[in-house]
Image: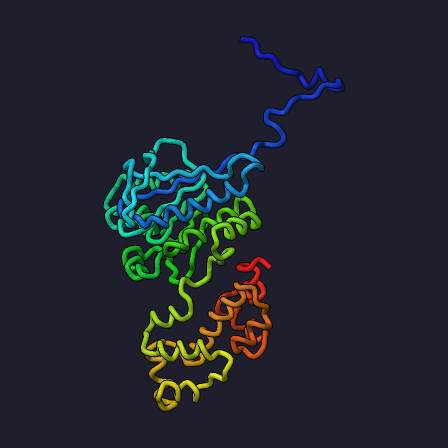
Amino acid sequence: MVTSYLDTHTMAGKDLARMPNTPRILPRMAHHVEILIFPDCQMLDATGPAQVFASANDINAGRSKRLYEIALVAEDPEVMCSAGMVLKCRPMSVTSGAPDTAIVAGGRGVNAVLARPATIEWIADRAARVRRMASVCSGAFLLAEAGLLDGRRAATHWNRYDEFVARFPAVKLERDPIFVRDGHYWTSAGVTAGIDLALAMVEEDHGRKLALAVARELVVFLKRPGGQSQFSAPLALQQRDDSFSDLHAWIADNLSRPLNLETLAERAGMSLRSFARHYRARTGLTPATGVELIRLEHAKSRLEGGASVESASRICGFGSSETMRRVFLRHLGVGPKDWRTRFHGS
C-alpha cells in the first residue's frame, strides 16, 4: 500500500499550505437530552424540562441548527403518568451512544422503580457517559439508589426529605434549595423546580440571554437562583404550625404599620410573655423573625413585578432600602437589586 503525503522537510519554503484535518469553525452540534420516565411518574417532571429545551429551539429557529434534540425514554414504549396521560417513549438502551444530558423524572412511581434493576443499571450507565446527569423531584431517589450521590450535595421534594435521609445517609441532602449542582450531577426539588433546573442548563449551554427569553416565553420567573428556598415565607410558617395563620394574614395586610411585639401580642389576644413563648414553640421562630420573613416575601413579589427597591422597602415596612438589603442578604444571599434583575430582567 502506498501512502501519499506532503514531506514538510522537502517542501519547506514552498508556497504550499497544508489543509487542516478539521475545519477551523466547527458546526454547532445539538445537545441530545434524554428524559427517563416510568409508570406513575409526575408528568410535569418530564414535560416541564422538555418544554424549556423545545422553547429554546423555537426561539433560536432560523439562526442555526436545532439547539436540543429531546427524547423521552422508558422500559416500555408507552408510559401512563400520574395525571392519567400516556406518553410515547423510545426504549432504554445501555449499549447505544450516550446523550449530552440525561434527566430522571420523579413521582409516585419512584418506589416501584427502586426495585427494578434494569432501570437502576441504566441510570448508572448513563451517568458514566453523559456530560450532565440530573433528576427532578423524587427522581433523586433513583440516582441515589444507583450510588451516584454518595458524598454529594443533593435536593429532592421537601415532602420526602426525611425518608430520603433515612434511606441514603451518605448523601448530603439539602432541605431548601430549588436545585443543587455538584460536579456533573444536578438534582432539583419538586415539579416546577425541574423548569428552573432546565433553564439553568440552557444558560450554561447558550448564555443568560437565551435562558431569560425562554423564561419569558413560558411566562415563568426569569430565573430563580438554585439556592432559593422551596417555600414561600407564609408557606414555611404554615409548615411549622398554622396556629397563627390568622395573625400572619393580618401582618401581611398591615406591613406598613409598626409591627412590634406589643402590637402582635394584642392582636393575638395574649400577654407579651405568653405570646412570645407560644409563637416560638409553634413556629420555631421569634415574632420578629416571622414578621421579617413576611415582609421579605412581599418585597420579593413587588420587585419581581418591577417595583423599585426604594418603593418595595417603603411599602413592605422595612424603614429603609439598606435595612431591606441586609434582610435579603441574610435570607437569600443576594441583594434586592440583584433579585429584581434576576426576575424582572431590569
